[in-house]
Length: 226
Ligand code: CA
Image 1 (cartoon, rainbow, N blue to C red):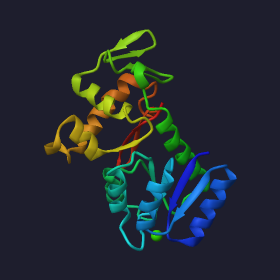
Image 2: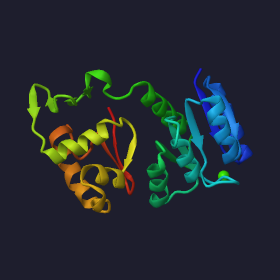
Image 3: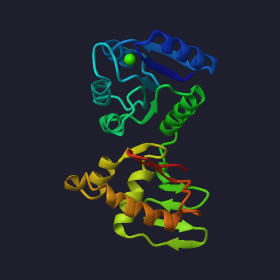
């Protein structure tokens, strides 16, 4: 059974989440503050953590950092904080995804399933091959194919694509992408990303203006979806 740790101090939300999760056959543990959450994360070994950022004893961002010190468990933030800056802070601290309150239970459950799937399916695995309906990437050979054709990518395009592909489904912040591809001095140059993502979409997407695989999360970052 998949174990979900719900970290939330609002009893009504805890009740609603617990009911919905149990109805979907998840095992649920709950913590109403950060200290309990850390203790339970270690003792209960959840498969995924749903985390509210506004906790009574600790800021959720600090809790993400504390968890990330030793745990690779996916963390899905569920928060009323809705500015891009706040979302990016959570992602940069190590959260995997972000859902804004008030949330639709169906959307939350879909994101939860995606977060769990990502840990089971670690992207390319040992083959190094990532296949979508539109293109296939061989991470070891550093080759991209669309149908029968090889797609030529510049070294920078390749690096950007690789950072996203290695975290399938995960929202990667502008800052993370810029740091990994161009280096820390460039972490505010988000226009680089717009230019290079447009180039990648033209080369890889069937309809570059409606991308299915290289997804923009406005104000936050990008996501690769198979
Ligand atoms: Ca709260």
